[in-house]
Amino acid sequence: MLNEAVRCLDEGIIRSPRDGDIGAIFGIGFPPFLGGPFRYMDQIGVKSLVEMMNDFAVKYGDRFAPCDGLLTRAGLDEPFYNTNHSK
Image (tube, rainbow, N blue to C red; front, side):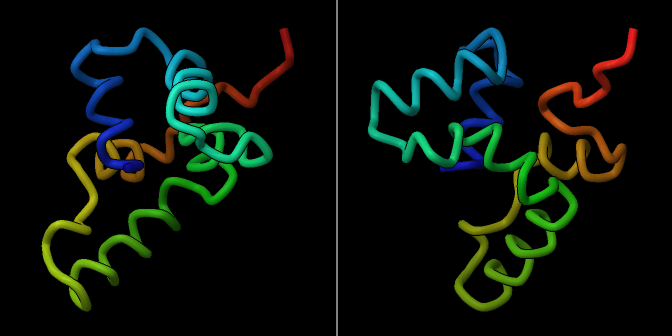
């Protein structure tokens, strides 16, 4: 599900991580206390998520491999939400 959320963002199906989070919570019942898939990925950390998904891919098959968008963001250490609140 996390891979598909990232693909939707990267392909322009959703405009922003916020739209994806709101849609997942209200549309498909993603647990609200996790904040939505993008907020959840930021809480875990994209690098940590990629490591977990790579481990799952080795154990359970390629369907668990992280998508290109996750790999790119992990390499750039780029979260989905800007956590820098200073202006």
